[in-house]
Amino acid sequence: MELFDEFPSMGRKDLVGLKKGIDFAFRDFSRENGEAIEGFFDPLMYFMVWFEKLLMAAPWPIMILIFALLAWLGARSIGIVIGTIVSFLAIGYFGMWEDTMATVAIISVATFLCIGLGIPLGILMSRSNPLQAGVTPVLDIMQTIPSFVYLIPVVMLLGIGKVPGLIAVCIYALPPIVRLTNLGIRLVDKEVLEAAEAFGSSYRQKLFDVQIPLALPNIFAGVNQTIMMALAMVVIASMIGVKGLGVPVLRAVSNQYLALGLMNGLAIVALAVIFDRVSQQYGKRLQKHREGGHGV
Image (cartoon, rainbow, N blue to C red; front, side, top):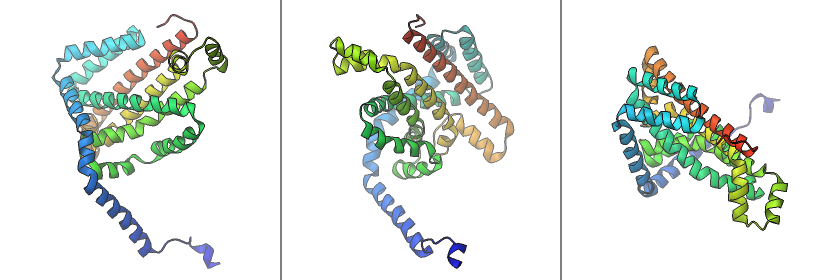
C-alpha cells in the first residue's frame, strides 16, 4: 500500500534539470531575438509615449469637455455625462489627474489593439469550425492563467516598460471581444442570410451589410468586457513599469497607506463605471436599432 501513500512524481534532480532546461532555452531565445522583437514594437512604443504626453499636456478643461462629449455620443444620457464630468473633476481635485491620463492612454491603446485583432479573429472563427476548435482552448488559457505567469516571458523578451505592460494587458483583455464577435455572427438568423443570398449578395456584402451590423450588440458587449478586463490589469501592469493609477495603489499596498490606495482605487472604479455605462448604453441603442427602433 506504500504506492498509495505518496503520489509518484518525477525525481527532484530530473525536475530541476527540466526547469533549468526550459529557462535556459527561453533565455537563449530572448538573447538571440530580443532586439529584433523590441524593434518590431518600437512604433507602438513611440505612439504610446506620444499619446500619453498628449493627454497630460492638454488643458484639463478641454479634456473634461472631450470626455463629456464622448460620453454623450455613446450614451445619450445627461446623467452619465454629468457623472463623467463630476468624476474627472474629483479625480483632478484630489491630485490624480496625471496618473488618470496615463491610465486612460494605455487602456485606450489596449482596447483599440484588442478590437483590431479580436474582431477579425472572431469573424474568421465564425466561418471555420476547425479554427474555432483550435483557438478556443488558447482563449481559455489566456483568460485563466494567472497574470503574473505570462508577465515573466514578456519581461524576459522586452524588459520593463510600456510595451511589455501593454502586451500583458492585451493578453488578458483580448478573449472577450474574440468570443463575442464569433458568437454574434454565428447567431445571425440563417433566414436573413438566405434572403441576402436570394438578392444576389456576395460574401463580402453579406458579411459587412448583414452579419456584422446584426452582430454589433454582441460585439460591443465584447468591447465592454475588454475595457473592464484591461482596467483590472492596471495595478499588475504597474509592476513592470506602466505609469498610471496602478503605481500609487501598488505603493499603498507595499507601505500600507490606506488613504492613498483607497483614493486611487476609487479613481479606477470611476473610470470603470464610466466606460461600462457608456459602452452598455451604446450597445442597447444598437440593439434597439436592430429591432427597428430609431435610437441611433
